[in-house]
Amino acid sequence: MDSIGLRGKWWLKGMRADDEIVPDAATAGTLSFSPKEGGELELIGSFHSTFERLDEESDTEDGPVTIHGVSTEGEYISILNCMYTGESMSSKDVSFTTETYQVGTIIRGALVDPTSKYWKCTFSFDNLDKWTGIRRVHTPGDGPMNFGPALSDSLSTDEEDIILNLHEDNKAAIEGKLGRVYFTVFPEEPLTFDEFSSQYIRPLQNLITLGVGEAVFPTFVNLFSERFGHPDSKHSVHWQVPYYREQDDVNQMQMNFTLQDISFEEVVVQWLESESSVSRLHDHYFGTRYNDSMYVNTQFMSMMFALEAYHRRKFPDRQKIMSKKVYKRFRDVTLERMPKVAAWDRAEGLFNSIVNEPSIGDRLIDITEQHEEMFPESYDIDSNLSTIKNVRHTIAHSLPEDLSTTDIVRAEILVRIIVLAVLLDTAGVDEEKGREILADEYSSVERIVEV
Image 1 (tube, rainbow, N blue to C red):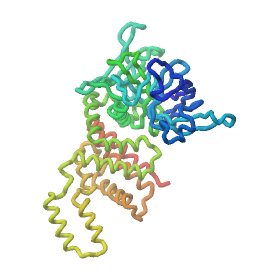
Image 2: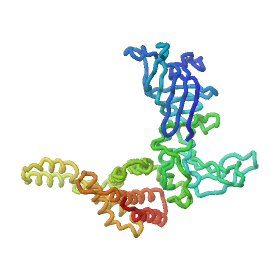
Image 3: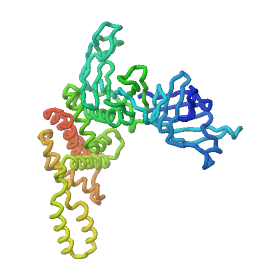
Image 4: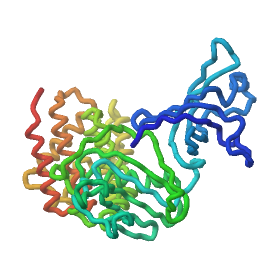
C-alpha cells in the first residue's frame, strides 16, 4: 500500500454550505500517511480557536470526526475517524494556532463518511500473483483494444459475486507475462468500507496467508460508489494496517498450496462461512501469523484459545460431561460430604464453573480425530497432545516448573500443526497435500536447538 503526502485545504464535515465547493472556513494543511505508521493531518491554522476549546459550552469536536479536503491537484479526499491530538500557538501571534489530527481511514476521490456504501470493491495482496501458480496469460482481443482480465476464477452466491482477475502485463517484453492479479467483490446490496473489510478483505487475506505460508498484506483497495463499478466512481482507500511490513517475494515452491491445488469456488465459499462461524479460530491463529514480534508463549496460548473456541462451536453436544440434572446432584452431594477445609471455597468455585466441561485434552482429542486424515504418520498424536497439555498447564497457571524458550517453541509448532490441519481441511486442500504440508512443518521441530 502506497504512502501519501498531500497538501490541500481541509474542513470538518458540516462546514460546507450547499452552494460552496470549498467552504470559506477551510484551512490549509498537509496530510501524511504510511500503512505502517498511520497518518497525521497538520493544519496551518485551526478549525476551532483555543478559547472555543476551553469553553465547555462551545460546540467543538475532538473526535472521532470526519474531515473533508481538496488537494492542490484538485482531488477530493475524505478522512474518517480522525482524532484531535493537539495544537500549538505562534510565539509572535498568540491568536494564531495550528492543529494536528491522527487520521483513520483515508478515501481519495470523493467526499464521503463512515456510513457511505459502495457497490464494488477491488483489492490485492502481496504475492497474490505468485500464489495463483500461473505464469502466462493472454488477453483476448487486439493490442490497444485489450480490456478486462485475461483469465479469471469466480463464484456467485445469493449475497455476492467474487472474481479473481488475472491480467496480462502488456508492458512486459515477454509476451503473455502475468501482470495484475486482484479480487473483485460485487455484493447483492451496497456495503460500507468496514463491511467490505470484515466480510471479504480480511478473510481472503487470511486465506492467501495460509496458502503462501507467510503473512500477506493489502497492496491496494478501491471502492466504487456507482452500481456495477463505473470507473469514474472509483475511490482508493488507505488505512493503518496492523503489523504491516514490506514483504519479499515468496517462491511458489515454498508455499503451502496455490490456486492450482484447490477449487476456487468451493474453497472461498466454505472459507467465508468458516470465518463467520468460528471467527475466533481465525482471529487467534492469524493474529500470530501477522504479529511476528509476539512472544512465543503468547503465540502458543493464542492458538490454544483458537482451538478451544473452535471446539465449542463445532462440537456443541460435547460441552458438558454430564446432564445438568445429574451433575447438579453429583456436585451437591460431593460438596456436602467434603470437609470444610481451606480449599472448600476453591472447590465450590470449580464445581460451579468448569468441572462439568471437557478438559483441554478431551477437546484436542475430538479435534484431531475429526481431522485425523490430515496428520502425517510422523506426527505422534498421543505423545504430542501430552506435551501440549503439559506446556499449556504450566503457562496458564504460571507454575514454577522451568520451561525453556526451546520447549515452548517446540510446543507452539505442535499446536500450530493442529490448527493448520483444521484450516487446511476448511480450505479444501487435498488430504495428501495437507499431510505433506504438515510433515514439512513438523520436521522443523527437530531443527530447533538450544541457544
